[in-house]
Amino acid sequence: MPRFNGTGPLGFGTGTGWGRGPCGGGVGWRRGRGWLGGFWDQPKITEKEEAKILEDDAEVLEQELKAVKERLVELKGKK
Image (cartoon, rainbow, N blue to C red; front, top):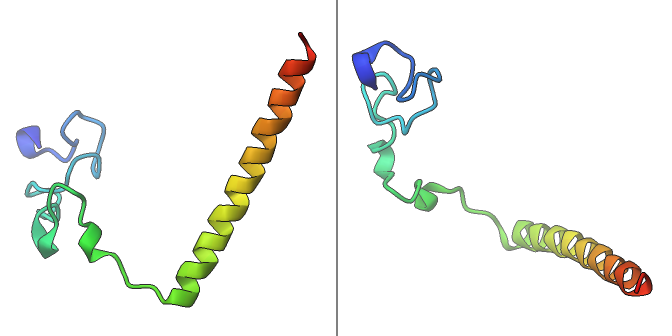
């Protein structure tokens, strides 16, 4: 953080940088975090929770696909 004045790396305020400096407590590199954002620090989920998440994702994707197909029909009908 420039000048250690709490304004962040580009002057946008606290919490806008990587958190590695003294003002951010250096949390960017603590607790095993690195360039990838600490994906290995993610909490574990059960298979049941994962299944629910995947079911929800599938539902969203199905809705998006339906909307895309409907739009394609509209576009083909205007020719």
